[in-house]
Length: 369
Image (cartoon, rainbow, N blue to C red; front, side, top):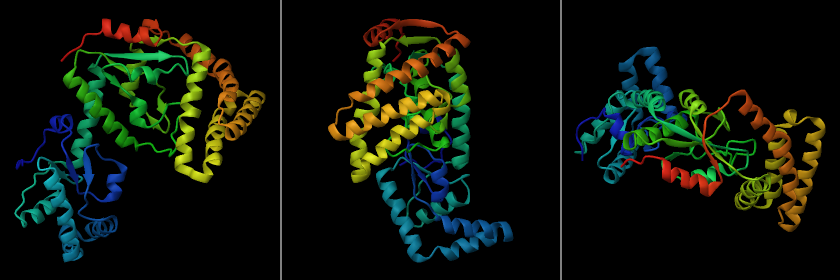
C-alpha cells in the first residue's frame, strides 16, 4: 500500500488508479472520474447543514457540528465502507473537493483504526482542472484522421474494427443523430463526458504519440452533450477517410441499427409498454426535424413511419421502414451533407468501402508500441 500523498495526476489517470471520493453524493453526481467510487463522509443533508454553519459561524463551529452529527453508528458505517474499499484497492487514494477538511477527517478516522490511506492534495478540483488543461493540450498536439461518410454508412461499425480510435458516441452514450438516444436515454453529465474523453486522449498521446487518432465525423453536439471546442476545432480541419456505401446499403444499416437492434431492448426494458414507448421513440425523434423537413414532407414521412410501426408490431417485419428511411436520406440528410461539404472543402486521404478503408489504414499508418 502506498503511504505518500499523490499529485501525479498523469499517472493516476493513465493507470486507472482507484480513487475513493468522500464528497457528498450530490457533488459526485454532478461530476466525477471513471475510476472513482463515492463513499461519502457526509450525506447531502449533513453537508448542507455544515455548510450553512460554516457560512454563518466559521470553520470551528462547522467542525463542532460535524462532530455532533458523526454519531457512533454513522462513524462505524463510514469506516466499514472505507475499510472494505481499502482492502479491495490497497494502492488507491482518497479525495474530497479540495483535499481539505473532509479528506483529513477521513484519514484521521482511518488512522485511529491503524490504517494510513493517502490522499490527493487539491482533491477533485485539482484533478478536474488537470484534465481540462490536458484535453486542450493533447487535442492540439495529437494528429487525427476523421472517418466521414454519408448518413447511415455505418461509420461506427467500421471505426470499431480499426486500431487507435476514439469513439465519441460510445463515451456520450448516443448515436449522434436525431434518432440517437438509447432505450434509457441516459447520457453522462457534461463533466463526466469531458473527464472520460480527456483520459482516453491522454492514454493515446502517452502510448502512441505519433500515431494518428481516428475519430468518427461528428457534429458539435452529440445528443445533449457538446464536443469540447478544442477537439471539435481540430476535427474540422483534420484530413478524412470517406466511407462509401450505396443508398440501399445505408437504408438497411439504419433499419438494422435503429429498428431491429433497438426493439428487443425496448421490450426488455418496458415490457407491456414497449410498443407505446418505441412508437414515441420513432415519431418523437422524427418530430425533432419537422421544421427542416417542411410541413408536407413531414406529414408524408410521419404517416409512412406510423404505418411501418403498425406493420412491425403485428408481424415483426421491419422492411416497411425502408421507404421513409430512404426519403429521409435522399431528401434531407444527403443534401445537407453535400451543402456542408460545399461550404467547407475538406482534405480526403482515401475513399472506399469498409474493407478498403481497413486495408488503407493497415498499410498507411505508422504504428507505435
